[in-house]
Image (cartoon, rainbow, N blue to C red; front, side, top):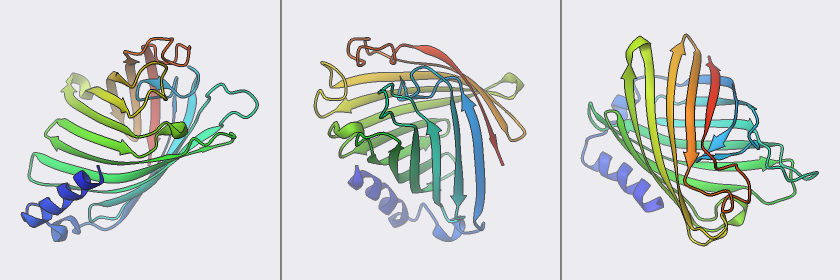
Length: 237
């Protein structure tokens, strides 16, 4: 994945299809967001034992295609007294338009977990290509959550504009593990989501149907991977 991300960026500059000077026309900008979700699901699996979560983050766009940011959310993995309290992500990357309909994004993200005694931190590199409303991407971790080994995440997303200024987003991802460590008796699973959202000023409202093809037995003997309806609201300024 490191090579994939690097090749996308280098090839774009080498072919002259991405112009650094054009990307530098705007100066740095900053934004912050705060929100709440009825259930925080990541790649189809609840991170809050089916409960709600407060979330928020800060982002910096340097005006030349480079971006940096951090984001945090409450989590609840139901461990007991040594339970993890919250997740904090740190990320940075580079995105640019190749032409009017094609763009790319490459970057790095570090997932940090606070409050518990287990070693749950991990890192990923990622890259994606967008063709109008279709995005194809791939993320890679050399040692996934809770030291579960190498992990690959190819995914596809498509966005539709609906009447009344609504947006419909479709997502399908394939979670591939090097070993049967993350889930019981399985080294892969699919996750999917269907989301309807609407922007009202700086407020984003969303309703999602999120699920996986993982059985309760494979999913840590819980219903955390079961399909469910979620609602969320995020304000950005």
